[in-house]
Amino acid sequence: MRTTETKNGVSVKAYAGTTGVLLGMNIEPGKRDGLLGFALERLDGRSGKKEWLNGAVAFPGTQREDGGLFPTNQAPIQKFRWADYRVFDDTEYEYTVHPVYGKPANPEVEDGPTVAVKTAGLSGEHVVLFNRAAAASQAFSTKFPEVEKELEAARKAKKDPPPLPQGALDWLNRGILKQIIGFVEQATDATWALDIAIYEYELKDIVDAVNAAHRRGVDVRVVYHAKVGDKQTEENERNLSALPDEAKTARLTHKICHHKFVVLSKLEGGVRKPRAVLCGSTNFTHNGVYRQANAVHVVRRADVAQQYLTLFEELFKGADVRATRRFVNQNNPLGPSQPLFAGFSPRSGLADLQAFIREVEAAKGDVLFCTAFDLYDDLEATLLGEPRDPILRYGVQNSRSKITGLHRDRTADFVATAMLSRGLEGFLKESTKGQRGNILIHTKLIVVDFTSDTPVVISGSHNLSKSASEGNDENFLMVRENTDVADCYGCELMRLYDHYRFRWYRKQGTDREPPSLAEDDSWTEEYFEPGSLKESDRLHFSGQAA
Image (cartoon, rainbow, N blue to C red; front, side, top):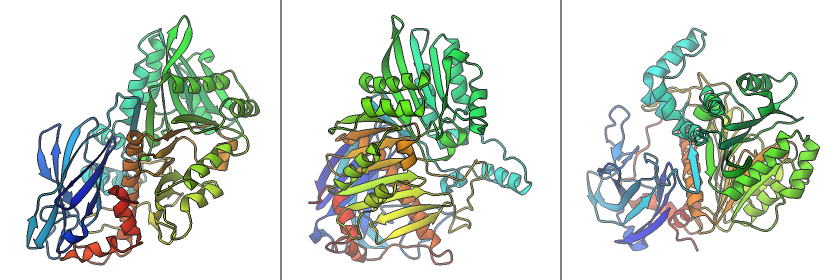
């Protein structure tokens, strides 16, 4: 949901997703004189509480207590873009953006515009959820210090890490596990069917939910990744042992069966009538649900669910990779633009990657992306663009040892190590203790022209690589001109970007003084420099780009 308001020379555009609200601010040039920043006030429609939002930076000389934050009416935000991630789904919020003048010791908060938004719910045609992916973050270390101590003690003793308490697990998965299990539980009896295509089938909560559905009489079928002598195959088959053989098909492939989707169907005369599909990037594992940045996307549309079911039938009957490729080429062509397209692989000619490239090349204002592993070279080059081109770009990519970020354009890339190894100004030492592997970002996502009225979202299991196109079993959704879906993805993508951009910034000098606010309006200069990247950011997110 998006809304825009203007008052007292200040304008604000709000983008509300499921798990965040992003604010893009602007101010008339004549109101810049003496501007110390913006004070942000929020009214929570669920609790009725009205409060000043907090920031992490204050004026010089302000004492920080226990690494605490500062209310923005005393330490205003000196940025033209801000985000609130302490929100609940399906909830109304009001944000008032006040310009602040006066002196740092005595700030004067003036009246400003109020925008009213409602975060995305969990019962509409599209449901988009993200976990916190914060096992290695300061937020986790601060919220669960005793857990950190136990994990560190186990590491020093070279013992297996203790299981995380339920409170920590709930906080980490941020509702995506409940969404997966709830989707399965919609199949209440023998009049329902569930068809699951999965790469990694491990997490006990999900396995138990599927087994319970089978015991209720639900017609459950599973296609799972399989290779001879493969440890993942052995794990999958152990966890599928409660299902009868006729309900399972081992997907033998020289690459990987990388799907993570579930189709929910009503049985009518023994025939499946699809109702909805659950898809996204989340493997059914501890890492996938709790540790790595992942998305779950539910589409409650019979036509889309039918496309997933049609592909599932091909896989379940045992089609080999060549036959599957022929089927996808024939039945899933990437033709004229559609508002909602469900795509699959393997396919020939890298047609899906070429379609992604065309969408990015057609960007008129901005490109956001979040990827894991190596990308197809031509697609990566298109995402990065040309040095100083007019497109605003933000992106993060997870490699094995670092997070690589694209800071606005190719002239200013950054690299943020996955963990901060030393405590910094109230920050705790971080690690991935208790996690198998070290991938922190697993989301595969591109959003083109996010700030426009005609955004394009590409998301799914597809790794945006050559292998994902021509070898793996993959799926993706391409959603055009749906700002509500774009807001769900874009707000979360910017959370990850800003998180790792901040980590890079803090990594530059661990011994320097903590950052502080400017004591006059000089902070605004770079945002009003003609042709600058910060000017582009201000104009795009506030909805005032040409």
